[in-house]
Image (cartoon, rainbow, N blue to C red; front, side, top):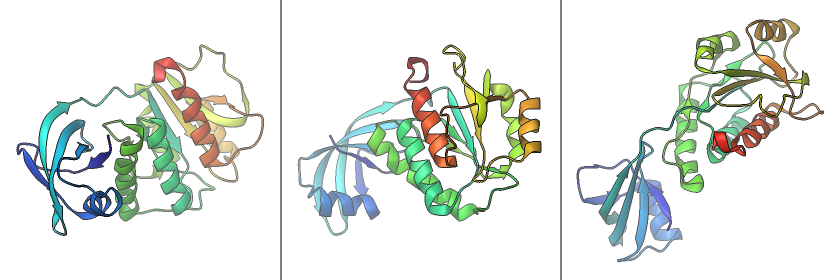
Length: 233
């Protein structure tokens, strides 16, 4: 069953879907009366609905069933360096699809990308749309970019703290257990003082590949590795 997004009036049984989702329903899916669809609101709700009618003004649906799911506990939080806008948008989309719980963009000495409030709103929208692919009901929490040292405020919540570093060691099989916070440096690598800072704060230098990886590749690779483990599912 196809899934769509609508931040609609949850207390009503009949909704009108407009905007981009209306276009997708009418132009791509050719929705017609009687079609069954699922609707998410990005806040843990799943609505089973049936199409009543579709026209140029919107798609009118009747909600037949509602499921409410609380936000799951945080198991994996990723703190990558900011990267260029298109790459950052792709990274947010892929991390959402993989099931990351939190994304904390960081600014290092060698970070050469800077994003504003508009970009954050775009990332949130991208994450919501990605939920339709991976079938989750909550998007990752996406924080505003901050200085790398600012991530220490989050550290006490996590039993495992990793610093992705191609100079680091390979962890033991039982070393990665949730909840985990992982810092991934910028293109051009971490400055030596940044590496010393994080290791001094208890972040274990860890490598997932013997080669030097791009920031986005390392972030996605780590997320995929951890999410493949049952305890991170």
